[in-house]
Every structure is written in structure tokens, then in C-alpha cells.
Image 1 (cartoon, rainbow, N blue to C red):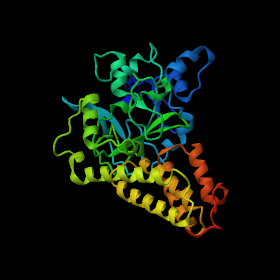
Image 2: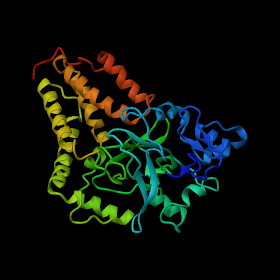
Image 3: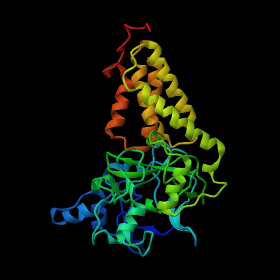
Length: 369
């Protein structure tokens, strides 16, 4: 049986020590009422500084989803669905599945720490490099929150402090160029969500890609070689010659996706004025979606699906096509983000009535071109 860990401070809960369990989901456990209140955000004014320094999960927002066992709506829990365990002497710790996890399931939802002082020292101390300074630990483990793809962000840069954060538990996830899981920043609860990109078997290590291929990566024209160099320089990761990223088809996909992304940006520089131009744009969107479907995280499709929807609904003949783009986008968002996410709710409103979009049938009177 996996050891129980306090969901807020991560201290080991020794049995038969009294365990405080969330009365709502009965899954998340704590070592004290203080930790439970901090995780929920129920902290008195006298403890305000602690709340600011050590962020909780905002568990009140996620609580009901922990009790759901199906892969489409539930959330995995430490000690029930996964655990942090020793992988091997070279790799160290990692995250391992305790039972099968279905594709699309939220594996975990972790808090994001942005302030680091005596209140949060116990969260950063166990992270690698073990005996390094806090600065080095953040450089190795921090993640960027500028957008939902959650790419790496360097805390040494001139970006604002809010541009990066530390997810104490999910920082244990190791890298894989062909990972079985992905991660996203949930803006509604300001948390980090890990989700299964494919079915994960019991005993399998749950890994993520530290530099996933996203629209931002394609736009920046980052080559597979440059990506491997960054993995080496930043994390000391060396991809072997048989690594997924060296496969010819993968390198070809990345090259073609970068070129196609550049073409789509060119086409979208101004709203396509003629019907034929809009059809050309949609054809490019379809080509990109087909190209990256099996090689990139689901959220990498989001921008292309949204742009496809916005252009398709300008013409009555393409409205069904636009709705299909939006349906896929809503499915990607709903599987990962909190149900109250404003963008997700907006997509759901548009699915009910696409005509509320300002560009709906914008060029219906002009089918020439």
C-alpha cells in the first residue's frame, strides 16, 4: 500500500495517526486542520501571509471531481491512482501509476507556488538538484504559466514573477520525448493539471515532455536539434539515437508543421476576403490538425481549431464545419480544465448558438471570389 501524504504540506502521514480526510470527496487527506483550510483557501486574516506564500489547490473547486471514477470527468489522487516512488539510482524519483489510468483522465491537479520563503522551504528542499540553491531548483523545476501549453519559463529572465511557478508534486514527473501524459495551466483555479495522453498501465511511470511541440514552438521555428540541445543545456537530458525525437517521421512532421504554421499565419494576417481564400485557409487548418494529431499534446490543436471555427462560420455553407472544429476544441478543454473555466463556458455557449459570435455569416452575401 502506498504511503499517505498530506495533500497540502506533503508530509508523510504515519498510520495509525489521525488522518483528516476531506468530507466532500473523502479522497484528499491532510495532517491538520490548518493544512486542510490552506488547501481550500479558508485561512483567517492572521494567517494571510502564509496563504500568500504557500498556495493551496483551491480544493473547494475541484472537490466534487475527485469522487468521480470515470476517465472523462474525474481526477486521479496520490495514494489511490499514483504515487511518487524511486525509479532507479540514475533517474531518482518519479510518478508511477498504482492502477490503470484511462486516456484523457486528469491524473492530478497540483498547486502552483510563486513565493518562496521559510513557509515553503519544505516544498523546495526535496527537489533536484538536492543541494543546490533555491535559484537553481527553480531554474530546473519551474514551469511557465503564460498560456495553457505551459512551456518552460526561465525565472532568471526579466519576465514578471507570475510568469513562472513551481508545482511541488508534479515537479517529480520525469521527461520523455514520447510521453504518456501532458500538463496544462488551469487559469480558473491557477493550478497545474496533469492528464493522460494515452492509456497508462498499472506500474508504468507517468512521464511528460519538458518541451512539448506546440504552436508557439512551430512559430519560433525551433528544430528538433535545437530542442535536444535545450534539453541537454537546461536539464542535462541526452536523447539516445533511438529516441522518439530522432525518428525520421517525427523530424519530418516538425519541419512541415513549422512551414505550415508560417503559411497559416500569413493567411490569417488579415481576414480572408473571398470565399476561395477562406476555403484555402480552412484547408491549411485541416492539414495542420491531421499532421500534428499523433505527435503533439491535444492543447497544441487549440489555436488551430479556434481559428478554423472563426473563419468557417463566416459562410453558411461552412457553419457545420466550424461547429465541428468548436466541438473538438470544447472536448479538449473540458477533458483538462475546470468546468467553470471562462473560456470553456464561452465555447459551450457558442456550441448552443454559433450566431452569437460577431463574425457569424459575416460574408454570407459575398460568395464570389
